[in-house]
Amino acid sequence: MTQIPFSQSHHWLALMIGNSRLHWGYFQGETLQKSWDTPHLTNEIITLTIPDHLLIPEVPNHLPVYLASVVPSQTTLWQKYPNLSLITLDQIPLEKLYPTMGIDRALAVLGSGETYGFPCLVIDAGTALTITGVNSDRTLVGGAILPGFKLQLQVLATQTAALPQTFLPPNLPPRWGTTTLESIQSGIIYTILAGIEAFIQDWLQSFPDSKILLTGGDSIILSTYFLPKNRYLEQILYQDKNLIFWGLQSVISKQIKM
Ligand SMILES: Nc1ncnc2c1ncn2[C@@H]1O[C@H](COP(=O)(O)OP(=O)(O)OP(=O)(O)O)[C@@H](O)[C@H]1O
Ligand SMILES: CC(C)(CO)[C@@H](O)C(=O)NCCC(=O)O
Ligand SMILES: [K+]
Image 1 (cartoon, rainbow, N blue to C red):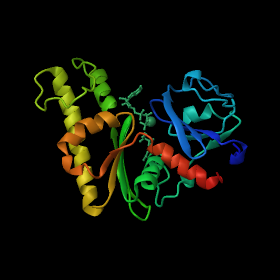
Image 2: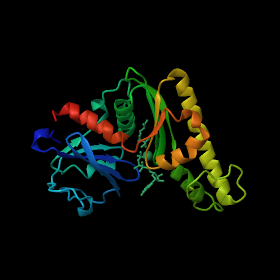
Image 3: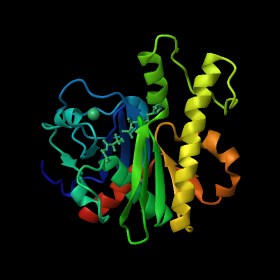
């Protein structure tokens, strides 16, 4: 994997491989022009044709790809792609990251700090739901990992006889469910919300000036559920689906003179 001189092209792709799907960002210089998601790859990739509907003009087929991944089997499929740079934990300018920490968490909390300021707490509602806090010295304080909303719903449906597959309702369901569906929704949603609130309150005791960022595939629905119950957090709580891209942009712009 070779480092691409950035001057070759101002067009580049950020690719975050998550556990559910691929998250793409198309950048011109430091500007994120578009972002989109696709399913995991099934075959090795050698050239990359950008879908027409993304309306990216004149994009070459070997656009530089800056790849961060938490799925090793997907990373392998990129080995023969000519313009690939793999972003790994050692390139993240944060202190005390531990060796097995997910690069998505490190990038999201870096992107959050660079954009909204340090200290910051990131709540990433993806396949897994992660909580990651960094202080004003850009040092990892720590975090937590639990099954995400969809995974919790799925596991109840697949590991029990009587419980059906359940969806996330568009608005907060009643706490006291009177049907199976409502009871599952209530159980998962209210316990996740209570857990998140407890982590935030604990964090704010140590870092009262911290911003709190919600990101990940379920972050919009999470803020819909969470904000009306926690109006006191309104001034410090933000939803931003692009935190990982801001983190990648920060790492890459420091490696390469734009
Ligand atoms: N089109 C979609 N495809 C898959 N998941 C989706 C989609 N839209 C929303 N989601 C939600 O996004 C969640 C997955 O989040 P995200 O895409 O951030 O996960 P991911 O790619 O696995 O990343 P991570 O590794 O951070 O978990 C799922 O729980 C699902 O409910
Ligand atoms: C927790 C996930 C799955 C979230 O995508 C990812 O960040 C990961 O694989 N992390 C490795 C373990 C850790 O972060 O401690
Ligand atoms: K695993």
